[in-house]
Image 1 (cartoon, rainbow, N blue to C red):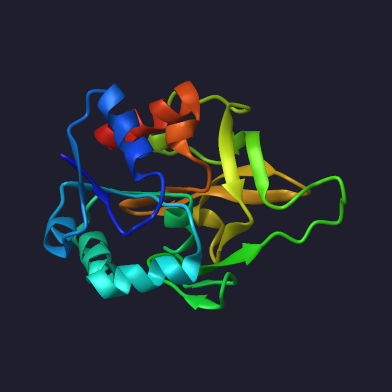
Image 2: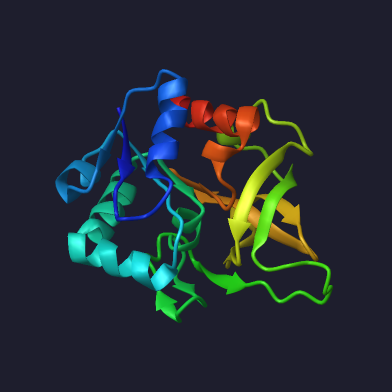
Length: 201
């Protein structure tokens, strides 16, 4: 059973639809007891970092996620769920969960033709192998909507990058944690492949 963490963020139902399409048992839960003891966790979301952290703390989900991580539960972060696993976000000067050392940074682009947020389809390049990237090819395109991006402290925790006015990390992870800046649930066949890989990881 895959548990999707409910913290008032958008795109929960689209993640659920993706899992349903793959025939993967899943549930949405805001219960910290359920989250802390889950078999597998997906930590999705769209929105603002400080608002997301506030809801997590109000619901006791911040500690539930940390407990699950420490227990070795496989965790997949998506979009905001990729950013606030780090120590800090520049968005709202927000202290985050600190599961993976690093910071979430705002795009600063020199090319006036490039708009913020970075929105739409873009090619992703794996930089090292990971089970969640199995059967994906360099240049597969995924769907993005974001103004901030993850910057882990340790380059060894970066598994894929994308180019938008320069290269930036889009897949990061350590141990039982993996997270992507793009939206798997909106990325057609490559996104569904990643979700299927997660179910087997």
